[in-house]
Every structure is written in structure tokens, then in C-alpha cells.
Length: 325
Image 1 (tube, rainbow, N blue to C red):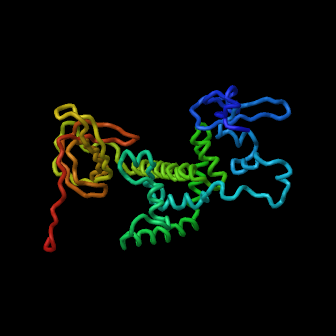
Image 2: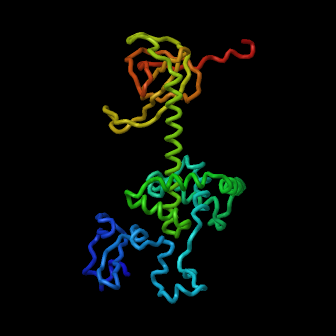
């Protein structure tokens, strides 16, 4: 067995081809495998080697040994040739670094955002070697992270992350690499990022479940119908803010570019859902009790809930009556 880039085997190599799965794609590494009995040579992608050879990736080092070597009870995998890290420990540290999967940041996204990646934050929290002297606050943060790490390892969350990663499927190189790394139980330096990314899969699944539960609760608690007829000017209506979504949209006037906007969702005392989409950012958040004035622009229905869409709105916080009422 040798890499496809070997000069002696270059006539057999065809970039991107894998004779095991029959697919062409960009591949960093392929192998040429020759059957000693028939002389047939096949090109196999690195991610398909385990399935093709019938041996897990963590046992591939044995392919360089003869049968006599494998029969030696004292024979072990080469020591010091590759540094590996326990996958469960990596996952647990990533959970702590991402607030249990809520704030995973890949290295590529961190570079674009100018932020710290999950891998870098894990290194900062758990590395025994630091490049500078830590402040008392930083030392306390690291101590708390180690305490949380012990709790995470005792819980079943690590198993949940591994199950979420294993359920991603093998239709992509990423999926096959992630499942292979998780099944191996350890990771080399190059594969640590893949193992850590299972936390992102877990976090996404958790958000999907939470969103589904919130949507079910929203639909069950909303009142049917609308708060007022179209074109009605609603004045100083007490409402509760249930959600504030913020993003950007193209600005169609000078100065051109993107502009921020909000979609503010509210409920009146009767349970009618009221929605205001505005480019003037409001200092409100979910849970706020406020007074709303606005004109009913339209009646809509979103995910099974009737919505009263308003425009030209004004949101006020009720005045504090003070101690004397």
C-alpha cells in the first residue's frame, strides 16, 4: 500500500477517484492498494480505507507489519510516532468552552469575525502552559472551567454529543471523518478539530428541539383572530414582548449598503400576537411589559398563529408609579 502521489504508482493514480465508493471529489489523500494474489490495484480514498480493509482507522498501523510481527504478544502500536488525545476529553472541554454547545465558533468563522475559535478558547481554558501572566480574573475563570469539566465528564452530555455526531450520516467526507474519529475514541492533532465540531452538531440539535418546543407552546397559547381591524390606530395598548429578532437588510437609498432592522413580536392581554418590523432599533427584549401604539397594516398567519401586523408604531415603558403609588 502506498500514497497515490508516489512516482512509482503515478500511472495508476487519478485525482479524486475512489474505487471503493465510486465517487469523484476533492481529496487530500488517496491510497493505492494491491491484492498480492491477483495483482489488481485499486485507488481508495482515505475516508474509505476503514470500510475497504475491514479494519478501523486506529488499527491501520498494523498494515505495515508482517504476520510474524502481529503474533508477537509484546507488539504494540509505534510509540511516539503520533500524539493522540482522548475524544471524550476533547468533547467535554469543548462543551465547557461553548457554554454547553451554545456558542461554537469554527476557526474559519473566527478568522472572519475577528473572534476566538472554540479550539483556541479550549486551549486558553485548559492548557497548562500560557504565553503570558494571567490576571486574577483569568485564573479564576480557568479554575471554574476545570471544576465544570469534572461535572461534564460525570454527566451523560458527552455521550449525547457523540450520539449527535454519529447521527450526521456518511453522505459527505465530513460526516465520514467525524464518525470515524468518534468511533476510534481518540484523535490526532489534525483530527481534533473534527472531533470538537461534534459539539456544533449537538448545539444545533438542541436549538432545533428548543425552537420546536417554543413553537408548539406559542401556537397553543396564542388567541385566534386579530387585535384590531386593518387601518385601526391602536393607542397605548399594554403588551408583553415575546421575541426580538435582529438582522440586516439592503438599504435602497443613500447612503447605500446594509441597514439593521428588528422584528418585534408582542402579545396583548387577550393573547393576540402583534408584530412590528422596523428599521429603528428599539431597546426592548423578550419579557418586557410595555405600552404599544401603532396602526394595523395587515392581518397575517405565521406557523399556525394569527398575527396583527402594525406600522408607524411607538413603544413606551409604563411609568414607575413610585413608592407612594
